[in-house]
Length: 73
Image (cartoon, rainbow, N blue to C red; front, side):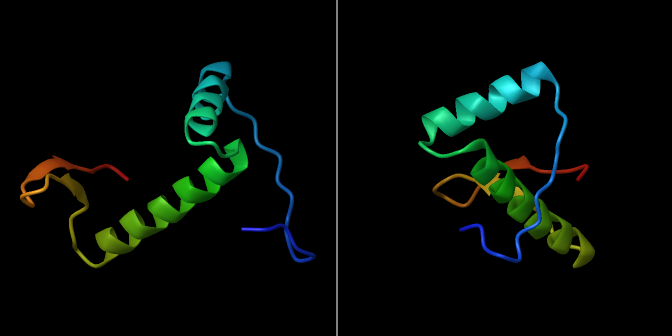
């Protein structure tokens, strides 16, 4: 996603621990903290929509067995 004329700049305060984790994720994924947060918001949107539609959200193994269900979002 590129910044364009319509982009809105936000200021965000996070704990030092969360900032460290964001930096680790960005470094290991060869991306930026901003892109990590954009993807996190997109993922949150998917989970929220699934919840609205009374669906479940989880992580499946290669045999489609539910390993972890994401709850509380």
